[in-house]
Amino acid sequence: MSVQLAVFCLFLMHYIHCGCLLRKIGGFIGIFYFVLTGMMTWCQFIFMEGDGCMRESVVLYWWLALNIGLFYCLIAYGLSLWGAYLCWAQEEEEKLA
Image (cartoon, rainbow, N blue to C red):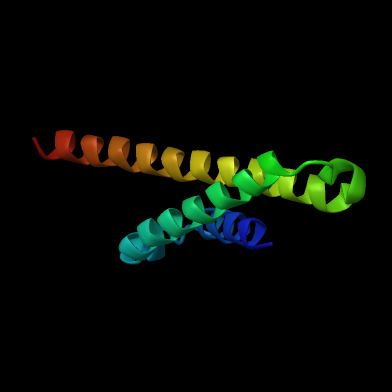
């Protein structure tokens, strides 16, 4: 559930134009990404090593697959925000020059 909540909060903050908050807590977001990446890597090990999980617990199997997919969406979103910020910073620097 934490992956869905994190994706929702980041999308919401971006949608309501609270980028200033994201910039203020930038270091904590970096730590959050690091912890989230470690946790999802651990989940993927569990997911890939599970023998018979699809037969025994279908709902939990697909729930974990959904969380792994959403994790990659979160990483892609974070990278796109970072890329947009770099482009914006470059444009601002060009305006000053």
